[in-house]
Image 1 (spheres, one colour):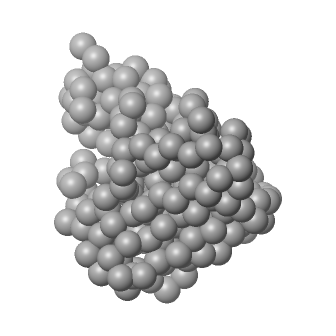
Image 2 (cartoon, chains in turn red, cyan):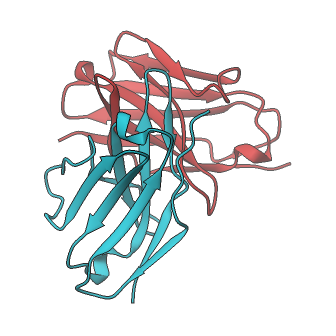
Length: 120
Length: 106
């Protein structure tokens, strides 16, 4: 039974870099991909990107220039960095276990979420 | 970019069947997943690969996908099913979510 626990700074100023980490407990770290997804307050879900255990990444084209997702297989952690944040980046950020089978992708389970607020 | 469209809200009486649609160009050629999100909680996967239920999800949840629309059906809807529901699809390079549907059980 995979469980995810995430953490990181919850309050940032504009232009700073968002940094979050997600720890994976249970299951096989090498059999899946690992994703970050965000949800602005009162709004829908937006996929940010994913990574596998060998560090192969895919990013949302709309965020690609500012996003870096990395993985540490020695600790079963993966991390998100989002640079040059603005108020539009204020959201709850989720990490998620990601299954990719051929052309299909799904997310299960999800971390508990971290509210990141960008304000001067 | 690829868009998925959901109705903002759907209402259903307890015990009745709720249907939530998700529309997109040739969506039937992609696989769709569905997530349930209750207030203040993380999303939970309820359907993947169009119609597969994860372990622990009640049988009253089912899914279908054909043509330009996918449908999440909840049979015998219960008060505990009141939540936001999101559809999701993917291709080789990106993942897209629908805007979400608030299901109200009246």
